[in-house]
Each structure stands twice: as C-alpha cells, then as structure tokens.
Length: 560
Image (tube, rainbow, N blue to C red; front, side, top):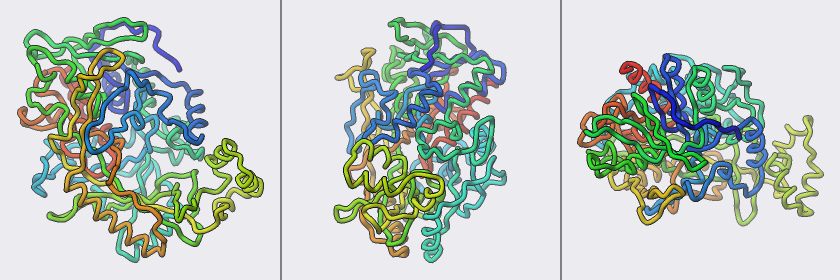
C-alpha cells in the first residue's frame, strides 16, 4: 500500500477528517474552488495491486472480507443492544472508506423521507426538502457515474437522465417480472454506480463477478474523488488517526484537530474551517471524545443529541427454489427493484423496497442448491476442498467461452431445483435510546474509550418488515417456488448503513447541525456524513451522502 511520507501539518483553509465518499466529495469540491484542503484519514491507501489481490481473496471460501483494513485494537468497539453492531465486518478504514467494498446501489431518497412528520406525524421533518437536494443529486450521479433508467413509477420525481444507460435485467429478473405483473407489483431498474459503458476515464464493467472487490475501476469508489482532489492540489494524509478536536477559549470556533501518526508522533492541524466526515459511528465518537470545560458532554453537544437517534436499514429475505433454471450466477448483481411499497398511508406499514437477487444460494431438506461449478467461487471452493465429487463435477463442466453460457443453465451436482431469493430493506424511525456512547471500561490502541453501540428494532420497523415478508411470500407463491428459508429480524445484525447520530435540524436544542450541515455550537465546524440524516428512509444512503457533501461544500465555499 502507498502511504504519505510526510504527515506533518501544513497551512490549510479547510481540514477534513475522513476520506470516504463524504470527505472525498467535500475535498474535491473545495479544492476545485481554489481552497487549500488537507484530508486526514485514519487508514491506509490501496494500490492497484492491492485491488487485484482483494479480488482474489474475496473469492476464497471463509475469507475475512475486511481483513485488509481491520486493526482489532484500533477498531475495537462494544455492542450492547439487541442488534449486533458487527462494525468490523461492514465498515472500512482506508482511503476511500467503505465505498471500497460497497454494492454501488445509488437510489435517491423519496420526497416523503424529508417530510415524515408533516405527512405521517412520526419522527421529524428534514430542514431541507427533496427539491433543495435535487440539483445535488444530479451532480452526485454525474460525478459518481450512475447507470440507470427513468422507469420507476413509484420512485422520486426526476427530469434528468442518468449519466449512463441501465444494465439489462437478468434472466431471473424476468421470472420475477412475470409473477409481479400478475400481482400488480411494478419492477424497475436498480441504479448502480457501476459503468455500463466507458465513463470518466474508467472502463465499462468487464464482468469480474466480484463487485465488492472490483479490480477494474468500473465500480465507483471514493478513491476517484480523492485522486481528483489531489489533482486540484488537495493534500491527502493517510494513517493519520484524529484523536480530538480543540476549540478556542470561548468554545465558539474550532482551532485544530489533534492526530497521531504511525511513528507515535502527535500533531495539531490548524485551519479556518473543519469538516468531520467519519461516518455514523466515528463522527459522534470523535465529538464525544472532544469534551472540554465548555462542552462537558462532548463537542457540539449542547443538545445532548450527539450519538443519539442511530438508525440502520432492517432487512428480511425469502429464499426459494424452482424446478427450472434460474441462472443465478456470481457474475452479476441486483439489477431490478420495486418501490411499490415505499410510500404508505398511516396507519399502514412503513416504507420498504424490494430487490431481486442474482446471486442466490438456498438450502432445502439439508441439500444445498448452489451456483454452477464453473463460477469463480465454486472453482476456488473446489480447490480448497477437493472432494472426489467436487472434482468430478468440475471435470465434467470445463470453464471455457463456448460452455460458460450453458453452464449457467446447467444443473449442479445437487441437480434441480434451482435457487432464487427476494430481499427487502425498510425504514427505522429515529429513537433517542438507539445511540453511540463511549465505553470507558475499554480503550483502543490510542488509549481512547471505544464506541458502544446500542440498537434495537422498534414496533414500526417490525411491523414494516412483517408486511414485506408477506409480499415476498406472495411473489414466491405466484412463481410456484418452494420457500426454503426466511430471514426475519430475529437475531439480525446491524446493516452497513449507520445514520442519524448528529442529526440536522433548525432547533439547536434538538439537533446537532443546521440545514447547511454546520454545527449549531461552533461556527466553523461542519459534518458531512449520513450521521446528519434526521430520518433514514428505506433506500441506500450513499448517493444522499454525496449530494449533501456537495451542498455542504458550497456553503463552506461561501464562507471562505
């Protein structure tokens, strides 16, 4: 991995903490406007060779998928709620952040997500509307490179075309489409930050089939805008763990951030404006760690909202099998979705969306129905576990161009039936007891209290996802599929989407940042993160994170 040789402080107009999508977009936007920007990132920086190695390792059975970035001492945490936080299986501390292994799903939030209290009398409204964020959604889609189609009758309004055409629906999508049509359920293309054609000096998707560890660059990661920010003279400092944020005597402005480097040195980076872009967990943690006489409960926390209102996206899945080929394959991703059940009327269930799997595995009666033996995962699994049956299966199913298409439609050793699945993700309403606090009984490698995560599903989430399961069952039934497994909320783990812990609002007594994402308490401290979401909706947050970061950068630019 490449590293920054010089990690000493420099002159800066803006200091940004975190080099994930929020930090990268903010850095690029401000550097392009002519400002001196420095970005401090706790993790390392990957090379192209690292990406290829990640692709190879991702395919291996039982690989710890976050092993490239995990530091068990640095990244320690505790989980005290009903839901296992599993942070180190989902988040990434590296230049590029968690976008290094995301699924690249880029739907927008819906209009009603910004007006939950006005429309439904629950949660609270955002201090901005969908229309306020809409031009930044357009810009974010263009900057990231999103492939999609305006074919979603239940999606948010849009007049602008996607930068690239959508990927074609998969074969199994067509099976689901027939059943959904009979039930009056609409399906639409899934917007993806994956190139369906060459775009922005990145190749089109070349079908490696390991999208979470894409080595080709066809899938967007925040590394793209890190590089663009550097071209505009921004300075990216990796392996710079920020320990605390220091303010002036009165507590009106931030003066510096304190950070540690691998050689054990500590430095103070000064700037005119500061942006915390560390995600939904580390952002509130850093503020809580930065307590002082002026802010005894944590920096920017006069509202006591820092760390509170943690949300994720609860999900449920129904798996089944059919007696005919479904062509589920590792070369592919979710290409179709349904927002039929996103908008709702009280007292009905909350919002959720459905996605239709292209990589299903299923079990029934102890037998496993799996991918064709020539899929990359199964080849490596056979190499790692060369049983006679597995070797015989592979020998009779050689991987070559003429037979690959047939292989995707060929019975495996287990024979038919063939697997497929439907997943649904829904909204969780913000509740103050779902939160991030400091566990002072345990410290990380820098001697700081670790984050403690408390999260549980409320009645609203449970009722929403029960309705989702009923719809999934109806689709499977219409398909004529045998349901083999159902994943409910029981015993679930936290999703990869961490939202709401420094929420946005107009009332300083109830929120942490204002509509510009500037903290109420300090005039030069900004937060670019999903942590500012007042509500989480039911859609993936990354595009909204990017749009908000671009909007926040504009406000910072106005002040500079």
